[in-house]
Length: 97
Image 1: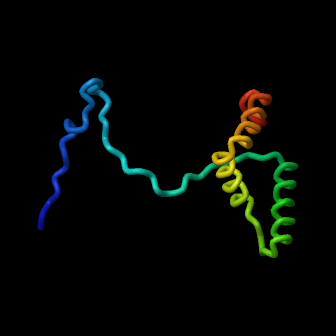
Image 2: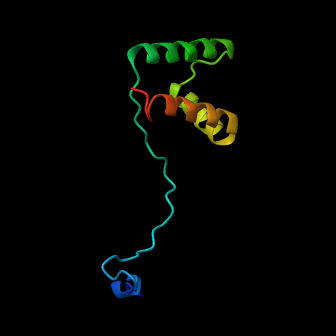
Image 3: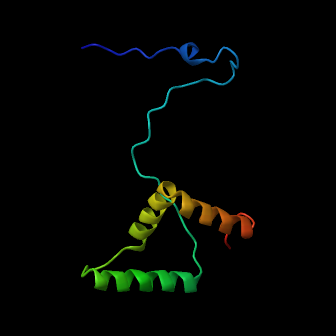
């Protein structure tokens, strides 16, 4: 049986800032949960859209989370959409309450 020895912490110390160890981290592979607060009216309207879309696509349901994931991907891929969202944020002072 072979035992693995841990590297000493001194191997991970940043020479320029010795009080801040630079321990290597593995890339995250698990999904990150995001919480979103919606007004009751916005939630109803979005759920209604999901239900209408599910019926149109002949699916049992269209989860709101799936719609928001798709919208997020489109935001990152579509510069025009990103610009419209940025303009809305600017008008709202950085957030939509």
